[in-house]
Image (cartoon, rainbow, N blue to C red):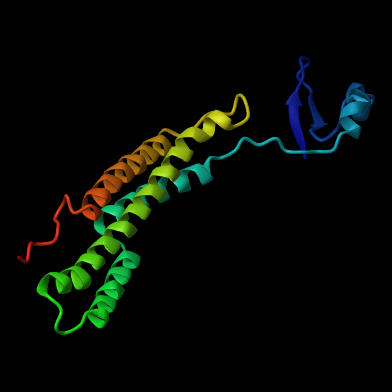
Length: 179
């Protein structure tokens, strides 16, 4: 691959672009590297990506939402408690006893499961928010969306836990009076 160039005298000369200048070929590349760099193993010092923290923040928000809306596990547990109440209640039991055994225990079971989901959401969210404080110094950077989603999980967890306690203690939507 030659290129045609015109020098100052006007004569065309061909020069090969792949030819190496003599001064460049005399330099040995291995002599310029320090020996310590040659002996050291090659390791990659990568910064953490924060994927785990982001995933945990999303899980926290999802668990907080499940605590408010009710999950499959809480529904199944409440249905099981309703069935157990129907089987254990005698046919000649009073209306108050039947309501408590059939519906009250199921209501409390549903509140208990919602409270467990809310507490888990709260704990996971707090761990995500506190994690940078316990990491390596200088690596406390956390994506803003991770903090926002973790705060959402903590908020939903607190609200869900409050509602679960109110529901379990019959302060919120207690059983009707049968007397």
